[in-house]
Length: 86
Image (cartoon, rainbow, N blue to C red; front, side, top):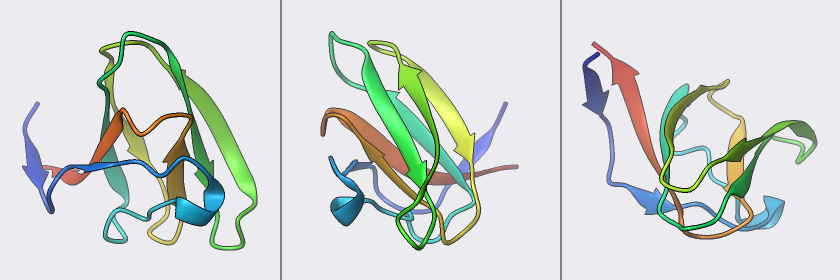
């Protein structure tokens, strides 16, 4: 699997007010840089929760979302990068 990076990796905000669209990306690579599981939340532009998932310690995943959807996590140790498959 190859991915194209579209911006620098950044810590996720820890509440919906600090959530990020990650440069309006529709695909975001997440990495839990922690020794603990962390809850990740996707919210829409109106700050309503669309879904949540647990990211295990050290886990990497890619979330697909609408460009206006926002991501935040239970801890800033979850890092996100806007990406696209190539």
